[in-house]
Image (cartoon, each protein chain N blue to C red):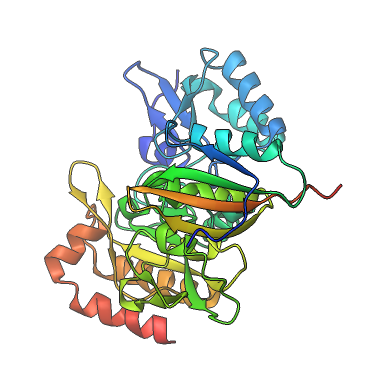
Length: 288
Length: 83
């Protein structure tokens, strides 16, 4: 047995201390809820050889291998890495980036969530911060990934435009819209833009593509769903391009790093210092 | 407004999602290319979702008519899969 266990650095490397002395539940790095078949086989072998032959699926699309003995840690990490599997993180840093399957697979998707999740992961994963920091991406207003639970949530949407020339007046879109933004008048659609929530259902349902949609990102800030529950809030309108999106997420994470006390979640910081300055910073980043 | 010529009808008001779409899809499969079917469906989820699913199958949606009794009729022209 090892003399001293450095739990801090173990947590950083994804080793979660168990009730059972000397054992850890090993958290793996998963981006957007996806793993290859080869990675799964590697995980399976390690769970059989070093754990108790099972894995735990976490609440945020991660995989943990419970019952890894402290003395096996280096071998386990090496075997995982050889099979293309990295360990995840815990503690005060950017955590697993979650995503639904998004527009690459799902008919409802407005944005390529897996691509965005990968880019966010490359940009921020494991970054040291005053407290945990979670990103989640979902493809549309169905919100399968519950984006507002995250410190920063990214939801796909569409900015829509109507072409009355192309419209055949079938009225399908007026029923597909759940916000009551569309109605029929003299065989054409009347669009009350102020009611639009950017869901894109008019675009998806229109049989003749009289509705066109530009994909965009609806971003929420300061969500948390643990001991304290708070729904993340939007600060700026739907974002139309990746460059602006990352300017905004950079601004949010920087503001948190600069203003939070140690062990203080994003929302708690916003509540303690007030969100006026934060909102100004996000709006400035949005406008470029 | 139901001045649209149609060849067949199907009533899916007795089904709930996803069987609404399944019943409609099965009925469309019975048609020949270019034939039109009138699909009667309930207000709410069916009318929100079924037209879009039929569009995604590649068929041609002609019109949605409010029957005034909390049901709608969707007129669809069958388009065969291109091989």
